[in-house]
Length: 164
Image (cartoon, rainbow, N blue to C red; front, top):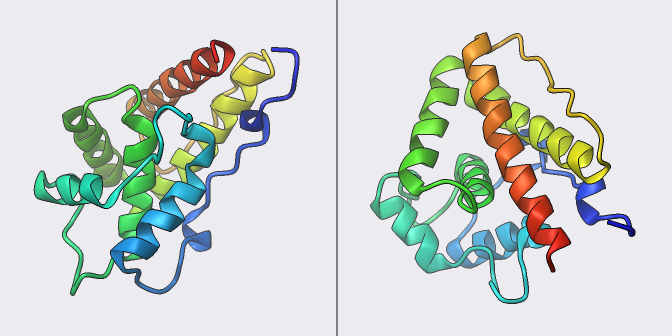
């Protein structure tokens, strides 16, 4: 790639950057599509819709909203689901999320996901060797699983970006 890609400097919002207040569906969809803009092609349209979110809730991938309001936890889950779904099935994503949150607190798991995703994307788009981020909160086998998962997503994003 000759020109600099948006993925070289992609920033995935950390737990503490996610909204502190609960959101209604239309607010949630707008926020998520803003965060996920780099992962959306013109052909795809929006990265996430209210119908998709309702299906994720229906299938137990994301917890149901409380009084039609979505929390910071919902936002984090949906960011992860939307990024992973370009490579993995919803069943695989659900299992990957469970593995991660069983081993460390949700906030740490999510922030590690963001850091490792940014690391993989930046390295791949700069044609550098990926130096995975170590984690003190998760065992080596889970770290390898997360790193390989995000590396596969980053390579898929790279190939799609180059082929545009």
